[in-house]
Amino acid sequence: MPVQKLVLQITVMCDTDTLEEAVDAYSSMTLEQIQHSTAFGEDIGSGVSIVASETIVGREKVEAELHAIGNDGTFFNYNLDDEGAAATSGVAADQASG
Image 1: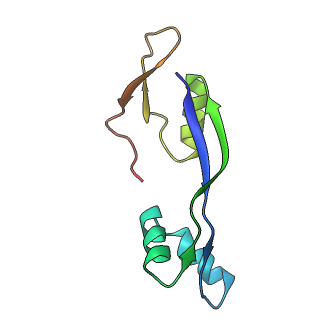
Image 2: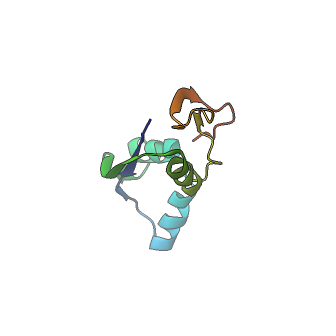
């Protein structure tokens, strides 16, 4: 079973003295904090747009993509006894949040 990968983008404008100050502030924010800052705070942001997308096929490729985003590779459960290593509909109990 394939996994769909979407790369999202949001543009934010903020009133800081330096670009470094803005980058430092936003680098440590969660998506929820960014949403709050642009909806209710002193910053403004655009809507989210999809800038890239692809279908990831194969257990090894999916695991590599998961590793690339900081997951341990077990977010999607796989039936390893199945020769095709097809994905199940469950999610690993130890999935990463955020």
